[in-house]
Amino acid sequence: MKELQPLNEQVILDLTEEKGEQRTATGLIIPESAKEKPQTSKVVAIGTIENPAIVVGDTVLFKKYTGTEVEFEGRKLLVIPYEDLLAKVVETEEI
Image (cartoon, rainbow, N blue to C red):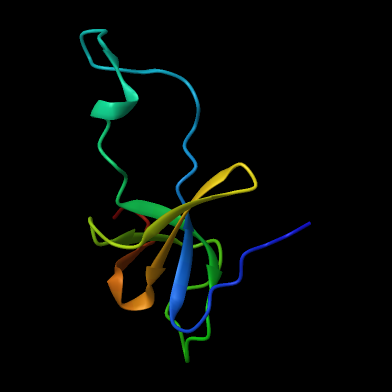
């Protein structure tokens, strides 16, 4: 099995989406070309970053036009600089 290991201060995110058609509330099918790219994703790998605020498996919010998309072993991945991460998505309890 092969895996990608990011170099320097890079992070790899998983952009692989669930297959299946998406529809609007009125039932219209949304084609792939019209879908908006996600801005949240799961962290797959982290490069050599001192004291990162994230770990593999975290879901993060990242800048809209960043990184390099790659296809690797059937998965759609995004390699981005660590500084392009905006926030970590965390579950909280409702008060």
